[in-house]
Length: 65
Image 1 (cartoon, rainbow, N blue to C red):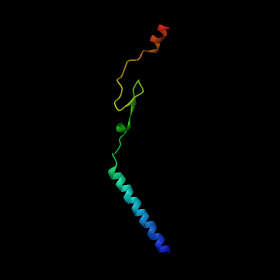
Image 2: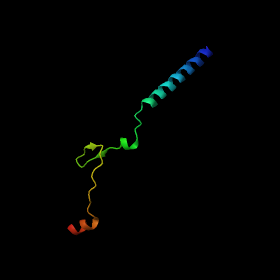
Image 3: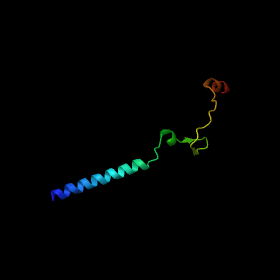
Image 4: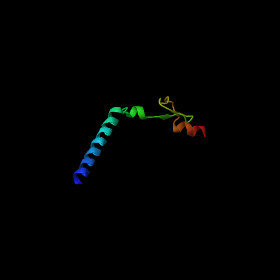
C-alpha cells in the first residue's frame, strides 16, 4: 500500500512538471512593453501611447481667473 501511494505521488509530480514545462514553452513571453495599455481622452483603451501635449502651467491658470 505504501509503495502504491509513493508511486502515485511520483507520477503526479512528473505530470505536474510536464504540464509546467509545456506552459513555459508555449508562453508568449509577455514583456512589460507588450502588456501596457493606454487610455485616450475619450476613454478608449489603445496600445499606442498618447501624443504628448503641452499643458498650461499653474501661473497661466491663475491669470485667467
